[in-house]
Image 1: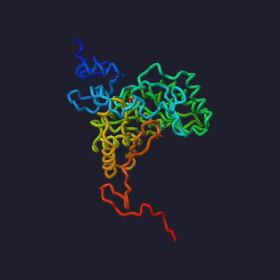
Image 2: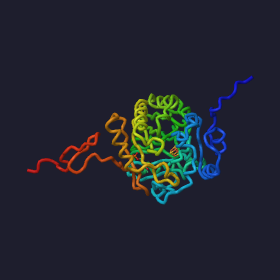
Image 3: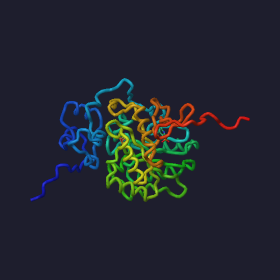
Image 4: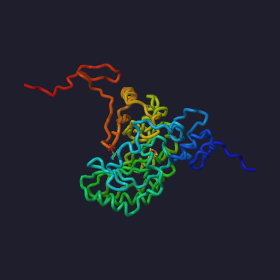
Length: 356
Ligand SMILES: *Cc1c(COP(=O)(O)O)cnc(C)c1O
Ligand code: SF4
């Protein structure tokens, strides 16, 4: 007789309301059906396995399992919250800052985050760039020597095969003025088995090619289990500098202890925390957004108790496309500087040196 299957062993990515219910990750409801029908859903096995179905406030489930709260749109929310479209000269490329462009070779992801900043754009498997689209994007870069960096995002570019990634690298290497090719990905935590030695090897730049950086999207320390750690080690051992991006999310990581554990885990895995993003004004995501004042208080709390190499910059992407800016906290005030304990020390903030 065959041994019985353990009940919580997800082998396939869960993609429908019925599959989530069957896996014990959601209760059936008309709202669940409506949300799942109106947006793209995917919970891959590596993340489903981290969810405690008995915990109604599970921080992993909260990020990936659809909820009825998504049916509510706040008046300030938008379909294109950070203004990608306004700065896109053609399909797959966004050029907002003079020295760098975004390239989106695919719009698919290994998981669909319910708070995703490109929620209304991601999930379309037919939106992958064709070789002709890539020719146009790299011709645009080649014609503009001011472009020093290509940020490869999407979607998730690590959904591409190693051969396709190597092709991007070869194309970027052809433009001498491109110093850096930076990949933004959630694959190391969402589908760590995809980060094969072959994928890591494909990211090794040819001599004279750009430096390749990898930015990993991680929001909760539990996302960094043994398999994710091994995937990050394969990238770090291949010589790739690793940074992280996290989103500050209500009910997921909006407390100092969770953020401290997250950033400590990242530096333990050779990933330098880079950005903590304030959530964008995406339609149906108000339940994820703390206030900026709450975010500042958390950053203040972390400053005194966490290593400097583990401190990300807290940033807001200004709605409409004006760019990302740090949003504090501000340590300098009128006539003084605040220490991590909250005490203000006099310092001549505006004084620039001897005037005589
Ligand atoms: C976020 C973003 C970048 C990268 O910004 P960094 O601050 O360098 O990480 C580049 N272009 C666009 C359009 C962006 O939205
Ligand atoms: S992995 Fe990134 S692009 Fe994909 S759904 Fe999550 S936040 Fe959006």
